[in-house]
Image 1 (cartoon, rainbow, N blue to C red):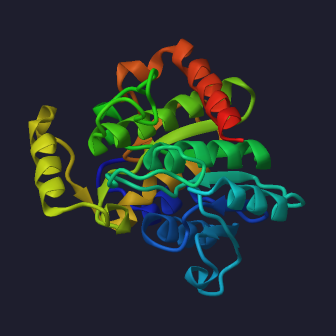
Image 2 (cartoon, rainbow, N blue to C red; image 1 turned 135 degrees about the horizontal axis):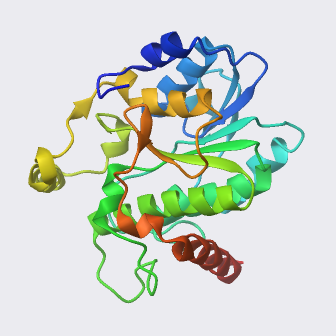
Image 3 (cartoon, helix red, strand yellow; image 1 turned 90 degrees about the vertical axis):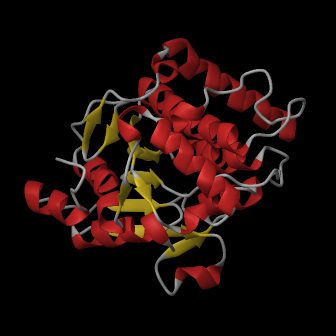
Length: 278
């Protein structure tokens, strides 16, 4: 596969048939999540989505869930308790937000992108998991001594990087604990994910991209952006814990995501943070 690969190419290449599979896509009402859900339905799957409010689901089969409020995560999990989930696609997220906290007082990007999905995944116990990370994870390892910015100045780029690193570490520890899981970098796509970005944020991000080796990644279309997620769902034989981009396994994840001690450390840290929030 290549940078230009679309989800249609993925389905054509492997003659994917997901008939009989139930797949849950978080954040399936807009952008990449909506496109992913469309692609998976095209392949025959029964696709459920999560929506932050009922009106956003537009009549699709859905459950209401706000990852920034763990009470709604628990309620969604309870509603789905009798449903066997073949694949959970943890797609929803936020990016480069102003400093805010979730209802349970986690820093918003970490709380939404990682902790909410951690709780949902463990409650549902799906057969397989696809976690959407980002090449932006290279902006920061987990800030182990202050993940919620309680003592240090907030940096929205660092916080986003931390949350996306957490997605990869969670993927690898989850797989090690027996649930097949892979992490996906979909590429740079213009969606509502960037709704919090100011003009200065965009300029800073573009500066960082241009300074990256090779000039950094280029923008993808929404069909190209969904390709790697669809590839991950369609290929259960992929090695557990793999990091994917451009519809293929990649070795381009940061070195700090490959330290096995960090996988378990993040799991323990997340459980500790959750215990404090109760």
